[in-house]
Amino acid sequence: MLSICVFASGRGSNLQALLDAIAAGRVAARVLLVISNKSAAGALEIARARGIPALHTSDTHFRGEADYCHHLLDLLRAHRCDFIVLAGYLKKVPAEVVQKYKDRIINIHPALLPSFGGKGLYGHHVHEAVLAYGCKVSGATVHLVDLEYDSGAPILQKCVPVYETDDAETLAARVLEAEHEILPQAVQLFAENRVTIRGHRACIAPSPR
Ligand code: GRF
Image (cartoon, rainbow, N blue to C red; front, top):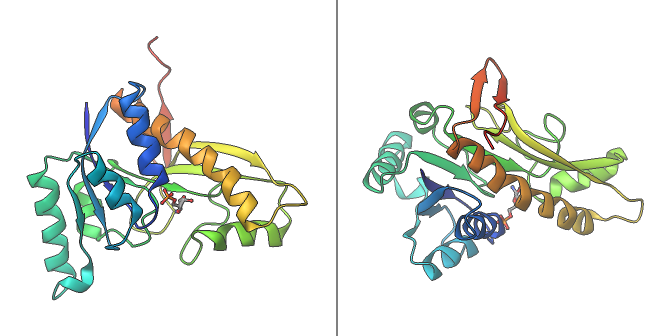
């Protein structure tokens, strides 16, 4: 059973989808801690409503990156988290945390990486860029987190169509449905120990069932 810390900056619908999948028995994991850099994040409310410890913490509260990093690692250790899910988290995770949790941090990105990823490409900016380019498909990617933005190995991807009538909002809503589907699925792949990392590839073992 995975013991997860979720990092989130926003409304928390991906956290909700993960908690629902756990409650429904589709994911063998527990969320032991939720951390947000935004005190008003909906994700914190969602966690608190379920009795999950939910903390607002930001690098701005600390003297430097090293102190912040130690604080995060202490929290993760104190709550016995062995896996991290970034669910709409808009800050970079400190390098030391990424290294300590190597191949045990995943992120959900609202596009088909490696297109439309990287610094500055988050939220509506992603969907606006997809529409401006004239793409016929977009989608969601769950990927491993490494030291750069959106550059780790993809774990799962799901496509959605882009319609000529779309604006960033309608496309975001369609992509979000795909995010809610593949984020819990990806967590379950790790829970079943089916992900092996070879170079930049995440190889998924077939289901034992
Ligand atoms: C999602 O589209 C996620 O991919 C992006 O921010 C959004 C967060 O949504 N990075 P939510 O907070 O999970 O509802």
